[in-house]
Image (cartoon, rainbow, N blue to C red; front, side):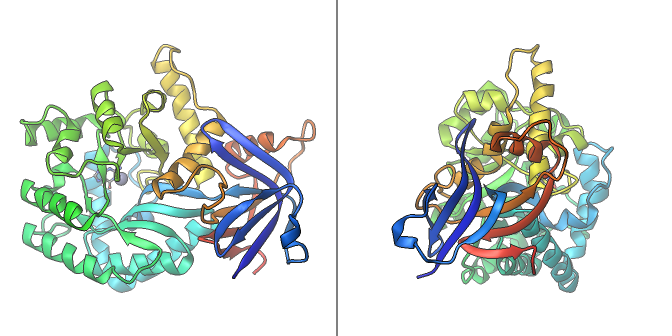
Length: 424
Ligand code: GUN
Ligand code: ZN
């Protein structure tokens, strides 16, 4: 049996908009499973070694439910272009480089470390279309302690012929080879990843839908991010009234489906998400960078749509989830103005819930540090700044969000394992 006891100011998000603070508390996990948070260490653990982080904050680590690993080398590039131009000018040529497995190894090792050092322990991630580089990505994530899902991207039309595109037959064959080779991963699992409707033929979409059903595989893709993209989808699928139906008609739309962006999803499309249990991933930095728009997150939440957050590197220009939370709050303020002050902005506890508990829910976890959850946590030694008064844990969290972390991450646990320590 392995016992982990961490002491500090424990703060968690047990429900949307709620915080639970236990100053000087003990977070206990046995074999990676959380037993509880205790103001006083229970008798049964007395004498066991505890890691005491003093007054530092012990927080849930982050879940980044949408990012593109092969776009990591192009962070901050092409940010004045709209989506479709940006894909052609920057994303596709950058992803093409991952045909080189040596390059993939070097980049993905760095990416995995940077995620862990910044407290992201769960992901839903796009790779490129390259099977071997995708397997390398899965290896590097698992080694670093990042858990979750990775997808070999499928794209057999409208991409970059000769540079970054598969034939339909190649795409199917390579997907099967990748799934076969993915069997032995323990913490990082495969997720079917049609890039988006414009880049996949009907034949390929139908194949992926069948595969999802036969092998019980989850699906991730993009939805209603940009108006030019949506007009293109309407041209390609005149039989579908809305974008989401192009996924639904091939069996790619269910309660394990993750759809990035959903910026322009109207009431009808949001209802389809809520009815099916699809998770919408809000990527506020990316939406601002490439001028996609401002997603109606409050409406989604009010209507019972599942919402999580994504850095969407490299539409997003960084992978720091404290800042992704802040970006989602800023976006909600813009949305409020666009909605004539009729929608409420996201509060800090709400934004932080979306970046932690809501993302973890996709992986079957209960909100907060609930007993039975796997231990995914970080220690933040925050606030070297002057303070107007002694801050409450809630105020410290607010500063951590708005000041993009406001201090050093001292340690990170993923699946019960300590995967980062600033001391080493
Ligand atoms: N839609 C299709 N591919 C992409 C991508 O790489 N990034 C974003 N933001 N949207 C996409
Ligand atoms: Zn994306």
